[in-house]
Image (cartoon, rainbow, N blue to C red; front, side, top):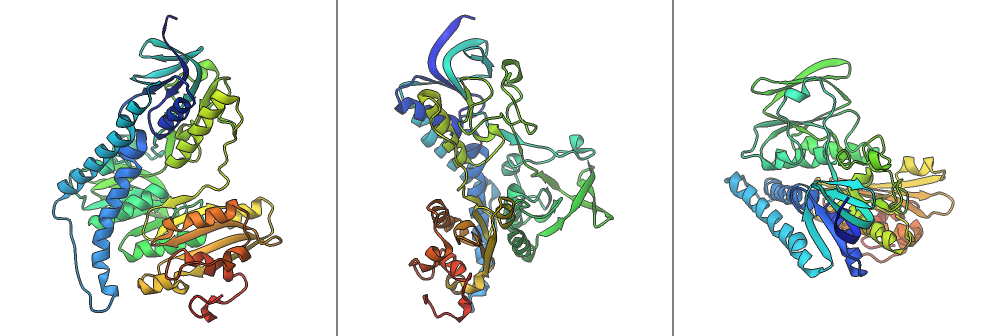
Length: 467
C-alpha cells in the first residue's frame, strides 16, 4: 500500500475521546492523524449532553413557575410560546460549543492533522477513503449509537431516538417512551414539562442498575407530575396508522397504548461494525464493544480503544479520561491503568440522581459485610427551606471498617453534591470521618453529613448544625 501520510498516532473518531487522545499525544510531542466522520465533536456536544441538558433546563423553568405555589402567597405560571425559538436557542448553543471546544481547538496543535473520511483498520495504520495512513499506534474512539429493541413491527414505525427527539418541529401532544433508563427518564420528564402527555414503559424498574429506593422515590416524583409509568412491561408489537400503537403485557394483562410519537430509549451500542476490526484481529464483545484491558489495549498489539466504543462506562468524562490513558500508554509503554472504581454518575431528572461507588447489592456481591443508612430529604434543612423534600440520601459502608463504599443521592441539587462523596471514597474515609466534617448549613451536600450521622444517631433529634 502506498503511504500517503506517516504519523506517530492515528485516532479514529473526532468526538470527546478522540480529541482527548489527540491533545494528550500532541502535548507529548507526537504527530497525530485525527480522523473524523460526520459532524466533528461527536455525540456529547452535537446530539447528547449539551442539547439535552439545555432543553431539560428550559423545561425546569416551566416546572418551577407552576410549582411556585409551594410557597404560600406566591402564584405564577409559564408556557412555551415559541417552540422554534427554544430549538434555535439549543442549536445555537451546540454550534457555539462545537466551534469553541472542537473546531477552534485544532488550531492550537500544529502536530495534529485533522482529516475526514470513513476509516478502517489496516496493517501498520488505517485506511481513510482509500488512502493509507501509516501510524505507529492507533486509538479507536468511534463512539456509539442508539439501539432498537426487538419488537414486532418496529421496522415500519417512525420512532424517535434521543437524537431525533431533540429535532422535532413541534411539541408532541403525546409520547410513549420505551425504556426507563437515563435517557427515558430525562427526556420523558423534559417533554412532559413542555406539555406532552408521557407514558414510560420499562421491563423492570426505573434506573434498574441503581438502588431500588432511588427508583421508587423517583417514580413517585414523576407520577406526581402527571407522567404515567408502567414498570414490568413486556413489549408485544408496535404499529403506525397515523398514531403509534403499542401492544404490551403488564401483570399478565394485555394492553394497548396509542400516542402521537414513540421514543426508543433502550440503550446504545458501540460503533464498531465498519472498522474492519475482525479482519485485523481486534476482538469485540457481544454488545459490539471493542474488547480492551485495563491499559486500554485491544487484542491487536499497537491498537487501543476508548470511550463508548469499548461498550462500557458510556459517559463523556469517562471517554475523555480513558482516551487520555490510551494515548499515554500508546506513547509511553502501557504504564497507566484505567480506574473506574470511583466514577460519579448523574441522571438529570428533577430530582437529580447522583451516585458513586457501590450499591448495597454490589457491596455484598464483592464480599463486604454491609451497613447502610438512608435519610429522606425531610431531614435536610436545605430541602425544608426550599419547600422541596422530594428525594433521599443512602450511604453504603463496610460494617467492620466503616469505610464508605457508596453514596446515592436523589435530590433537586444532587448532582452538585456527589463529588464530595467521590472524594471521600477515593481517600478511604469512614462514615465517622464524613459525619465529623464541617459542612456549610442549608446546603444539599450537608445531607451527606446527616446521612453519615444516621448510622449511629437519630438526626431528627439534633438541633440545627448539631454534631
